[in-house]
Amino acid sequence: MKILVVLRMIPDSAGELELTSDGRGIDREWLDFQLNDFDDHGLEEAILLKEATGATVIAVAIGEGSNRVLQMAVARGADEAVMLEAEEDGMIDSRAIAGSIVALARSKAPDLILCGVQSTEDLFGQLVPYAGTLLGWPHVSGSSRVGIEASALRVTQERGGGIAATYEIALPAVIGVQTASKAPRYVSGSKLREASKTVIGKAPSEPAGFEKSAEIVALRLPGQRGTGENLGDNPEDVADRLASILAAKGFAGV
Amino acid sequence: MRIVACTEGSFGKLEPFSLEMITAARMAGAAGDEVVAFFAGQELEPAVANLGAADRLVAASAGGSQLIAAESYARLLADTVAAEEPGLVLVPYSANGLDVAGDLAARTGWPLVSYVNEIRRDGDRLTVVAQVYGGKILAECSVPLPAVLMVNPGAFAEVERRAVDVSKVQHCDATAIVAEGKVRLVGVDVPNYDSVDLTTADRIVCVGRGIGDEASIDIARGLADILGAEIAGSRPVVDSGWLPKVRQVGKSGQKVKPKLYLALGVSGAPEHLEGMSKSDLIIAVNTDPKAPIFNVAHFGATCDLFDLVANLSERLQAASGR
Image 1 (cartoon, helix red, strand yellow):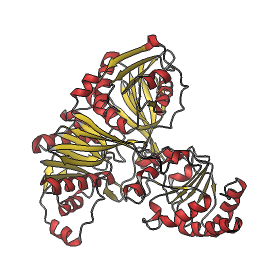
Image 2 (cartoon, each protein chain N blue to C red):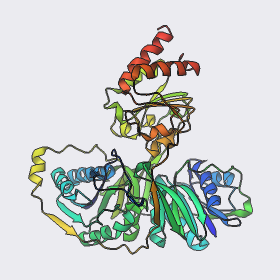
Image 3 (cartoon, each protein chain N blue to C red):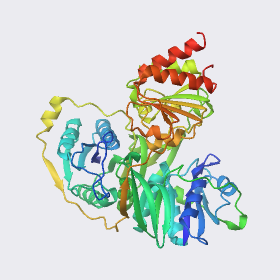
Image 4 (cartoon, chains in turn brown, blue):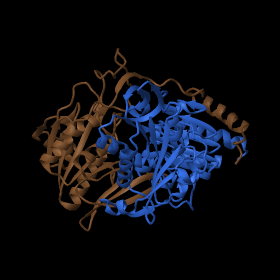
């Protein structure tokens, strides 16, 4: 079995985001980029499948820091590394890159494409349904478990409200990973050093053939929506206030 | 213009966000625009009993399967869209919606904007406001029609529930489509609520990533015990295995509405807020003053949560004479 894993580098979610002067983009100059957390889970699920079935794993990365993340993927167990050209200084728009992923899939012929169920930049739609539908492959978003049982692909999908549905899916397929079956593993420094010599292939960007989704007119920071009271940062003062608030509202007794 | 509002339901119940999709459709439409509710599920009953505020209901049922896979839903929706030729399709942001919205956009080539909170009609286009970067940034977008929008649950009010007039229901049997699918349902797991049901808890103490590790949850449990509260966790805490799934609050966990919700070290991603923002009294503690949880909290503090728990536990115990 051959697995293609998509790794997207996106702005660090914990960082502060500032807008460009025209208000239509975020200022990327000083941003840290990191691997999309859900894609990290996709990679882990691929490696777990490799360990269980002997599959080969091809990792394709896009965005700033791709080299580094591809080396990490190889250190984790990926067999091949490919970099996808990205538009400079722009959002990694799944609708825009779907065509490139589909072209890569047609050339590498994987049985399974794994990527994160969402990315924080998929304003114009998610990669899993775009890629799946363009390829004509079944696609399922939001997996908490992907496995091969009796030669069939079994996927557990989180449906909301704590409900989980398990499906048997005909290959080839595209799965959007929410959580890998196990937490992404730690990679040792020595494995990373070995992987630094990885030869990274290049995949050209291909248009998906979609019309542009929508025009971003303006970005803005959400205003303070809440009218809550800030109790400050001194734990004793905060505890005093909360104790009286809870007592006043009848919560202090059990 | 005709607008198709997608709705969902399973286990005999309609998802409440279904009623929000109809409100959103009315807001996007001009007077006289027809709103057609689309439903695909195991049974018709939840849709027929509740979606009367739409002008018409197109519903597909496939009895015998507990829920419909997105693959079948998307295919049935595509057939309906081809027949109805709407100018706009609204899909809720749900597990199902994540597959369905992109699938429809890919098939039709129509524009798609996800995580939409607001919709305004602007002549022959729409202006929408959508969340990006986990809600840290709002994007105002101008969208040409026809288009697909994936709409956030909780962004629009629910339209009132009433039964659909029988003359306004178009029903199709989805059994064959489900049987032909490449995604075959083999099992459904519903969590065991015997031990804990957060949706009936009056008081909840929820820990987020800020709790740090599994062992530290005991510190929060101590405070929860004093308050007579259930302990809960955000998605990262449950994904790490530190709390069981039945204790998860959020989009893929439980939606709760307790009298007291104390969030410790929870950042407040939109998917978490979806699960608790309607709680009566929300108190949030997070060292990041920009944490989105503070947008819904009635009271917030930026001190260290462990210091706060220690101090608060002491005061509550002293006050109750223990």
